[in-house]
Image 1: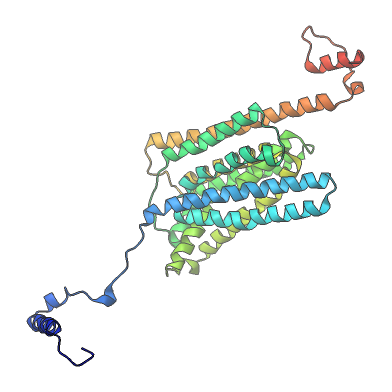
Image 2: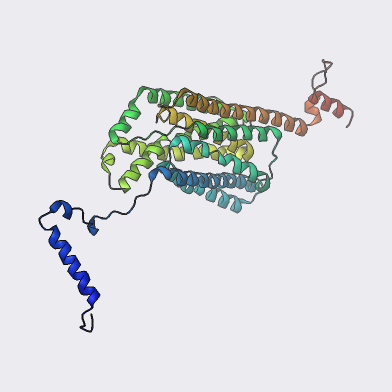
Length: 376
């Protein structure tokens, strides 16, 4: 063609196209069936399959969170060894992981998957901590700690089997309705009462007390576990990135954004104090148990993700939440026994040599008193 020669095949094809167009003139119905390249829309990603990506991001966030918490614990150990520079670096990096990267992974996960699915996945934090802490922090994995960890992780993982995914169109009006419903108000009142009871009563125990440690970890966990704000904010942000930003013209969207930031950051004060005073195998397990339980409970009460679930799913999901609470109670009771044994071993003979032995059953403390008196 460039040389000016006529190609017979090209001429034949051109004539065929002209005949086709001439035949369609006057028949608009058939003209509309012709493909318009400008109207071509690329295939869309199936959003129902994106929850797998959300789960993976949540799992990665748990690993980042575990590393951050253990770095805070290591900073306290460096501080006790008078290694102030290393302690400051460890604390700063660990806090940065807790404040920045971990919440971003959570936000992405909740934008792609239901809260009732993401909540149990956060139990991987317990697995990472159980595997890493004995190596990185030289902590002892007692049988009670291992049993409590297994119970909490098993309950969190099993709850996925009872999940119920309800497709909801989140709008500003719907969010406002969710926040003003009676059960949300009742949830808020119960949470505030729980928080005040921990701050006013439980945290008054002496430093190093398992009860105080449980209170610090549980308070931090329940604050961080209120991910319903993060879920709503993530969905609204996802809609805005798709070009639908109408919800952000309403005050309720900004309230949810503020709540998400508040819950994601306010827990850092309590978990940092807890990690500095208690071992990671105890503190992280309590923190994550309270986190998962609160997350799952808020998904049921506030977000209503189990409203249309059959009774056996709701019963199974509730049973899993109760089992997580049992695991935390078992862990705390084990720490009390561990603290008592440590005090017995470290206490001088003069302290234990008080009071007569008035029972035929010789306790371990009385046995140590006898050994002290005998010079053993």
